[in-house]
Amino acid sequence: MKLDIEPGSKIKIKSKDGEFEGLFIESPDKDAILLKVKNGYNIGFNKNDVEIQVLEKAKKKNEIKEEIIQDKKLPEVAIIVTGGTIASKVDYETGAVSPNPEISFLLRNIPGLDKIARINSIEVPFLIQSEDVNSDDWKKLAKKVSELVNKKEIKGVIILHGTDTSHYTSAALSFMLKDLGKPVVLTYSQRSIDRGSSDANLNLKCAFHAALSNLSGVIIVGHASSEDNYCFAFRGTNSRKMHSSRRDAFKAINSEPLARIYENGSIEKISEYNKRDETKKTKTETEFEEKVALIKFYPGQDPEILDYYIKKGYKGIVIEGTGFGNVPVESKGSWISTLKEICKKALVVMTTQTIYGEVNPKVYSNGRTIEKTGVLYLNMTSETALVKLGWVLGKEKDIELAKILMKKNICHEINERRVE
Image 1: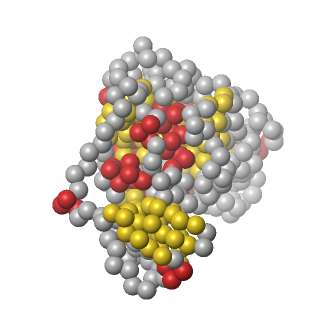
Image 2: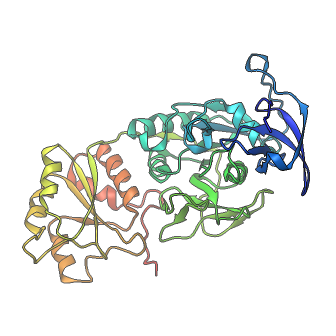
Image 3: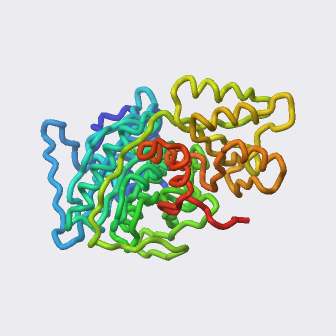
């Protein structure tokens, strides 16, 4: 059966399972028909097994006049779109997902957002996939967030961001935004909004509720499990993407999530967090040293890799060591002599590649030897350590003074107690 229906047309489908109404979506499968139903999800049918009735033809692009009517009694939030899957749609000719800057597309596909809050503004400082984000983008984002949260009428800011580097961006904003008294919420989706079983519906609604909550600070909000039951709110400095495709991609590292957030707006506190304080005036500290690196140690790795970074002018290096924070000490490939020289020229930080647990140079004699070279051991995620290192060296060039700042727990980035 050949279909002659414009995408976006309102249709009714009669199948053996009942009648369904929604918007017609193009499908790459010639035998399939996709229907976007009222709750925002997509349903697939074999078009040869159903009856189709067109209820309302889709308007052509030049006929569409987007008009968003919002309830003026609702509290206001601001949205910042940076790109990522949550701000993208599927190109069915190629099968790829590409950024879609039309925000009306987002609002049309997430029914119910307009019942939670009024959107004060939608900003697009840049529109790229998250692997392309760099420190210049973090600076732009921090300045835009600061501008928005300092508006009295805006209760919170929601940032749509790609999952792959959200934990880098959330860490950067945590350091760059000073005296933050409102929620800044990064959210995401693993599947684009126009695909079946997209996770964007729940994530966005939970992000809206988080933006209106009594939370303060930079957080990541997303699915708590593979089901559509509730979301977790994670602190921006100790969360990490732990799965490439699952809905519950993010986990709290060596800590607990801050809260559970439900689609109906119910929020259950899990651990302590900073409270909303709208009397604060947010400022930005966006100085950043780009010449910082993250090195993952592996068995047999030659320490001359450190020399390479120094020759290239790097000012700081994070080493992801084994276990409690180890690299070779006694073998022919010992790093000790190289570390002694490198630590005179750059600030070297040790984290652990085990992800969970702590670094501790006092457990084994090798750790004590490494620490004596000048390496700084810190209990934080490797990604946050890298971001903090760049931010600290942007403010302080002296290695010893920079070490003092690195050891200071600025925004709950350091796990000060051992997590079993």
